[in-house]
Image (tube, rainbow, N blue to C red; front, side, top):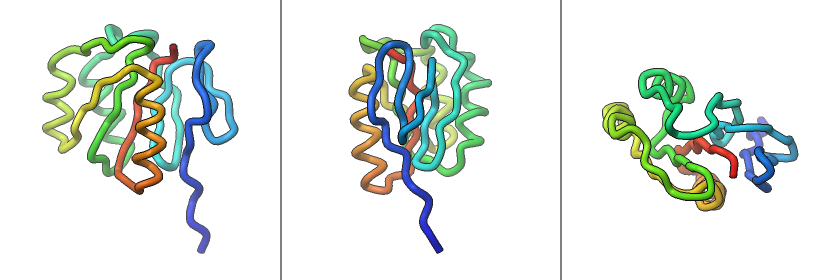
Length: 119
């Protein structure tokens, strides 16, 4: 049986991302196996309940990277607490760092996702 190919973030900028050869406009949430659109222009738009439900549907995760754009911005304080209740650690960083960290951790076969707001 063939193992599914892991997602790789190849580039970012100009309002989107190139992930495993496909262009994605706007914000995305990426796991090792799939990429989904994320309807966010900034972290200020995060609805904590809705966002956590979306993350829960991704499957088993240990870490969620949150790429907040060109600079590091703190999300609603309840976001980290709600994710922690799901057993998921939240790591906040600029989008470039989140993309690089995601690629390293996916290569290590870690249970990770990245919610990325474009730069």
